[in-house]
Image (cartoon, rainbow, N blue to C red; front, side, top):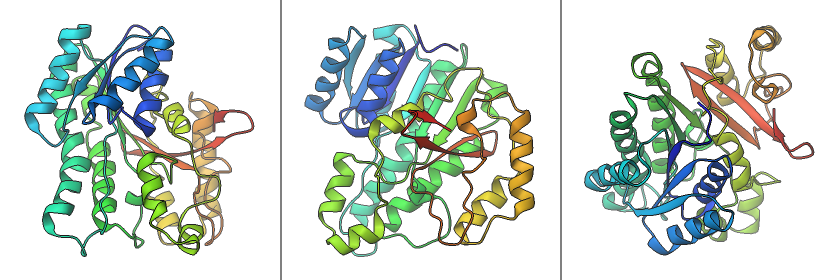
Length: 311
């Protein structure tokens, strides 16, 4: 599936990763439904796309509401004539986090961050099942591993998205719908800035990696699994790779060599190779990491800013 001429929906497209992804899809030639709870921000994204001669229209949506999400998909069908790409990006974090907040606060996090992508995917499948399509879920490295996290409610929802995405691998064979998941580390978005503003300088230095990712870098990754030629070959070593990071142990050289050999045989872009991107020491942190999941395969990629590519 070429992106040009296709129809995309991006949730949370009024700012941050969502706006950058909407712009990137439009530059690739897609007509973009800009979905956001904030109509003013959504309108700004539409105008930014149109200023570059792209096609876009905004739709109001609370991704936690069933009726809103169904109406969002219907909007794409009536406005652009179909739906080929869905990017479930909308997400929130609350402060204070669980357990210091009341249940209604962290239940809202679950509704937006996990129920929202499930609703979006559900209604998108209905629109894509006759024509195929791609769903890209934006999760977070906060949801990968077994370590502690300052916002357990947020981390739990992102972990749920990762597992949800991988569990939907059979949709590729049944309906031609490919579901992938991207798990960035810290990204310089309005939401993350609000979180960082609440930190002391010492807390930020200990929590946020140097060289924080830009939203445009995540947008670059989001378009990678959309075309049909990116098939996401199954690599069964993902369990070892994940546990190597979460248990803070060194990746066994045999696993590293096996992954490099297997991936070298796949016809996938160079930026999806594991080579030289695995954590090698207990202190290694995947500061600029992104995980893409398809067919129960977790791929670790990172961005080479000097060359402007994902590898």
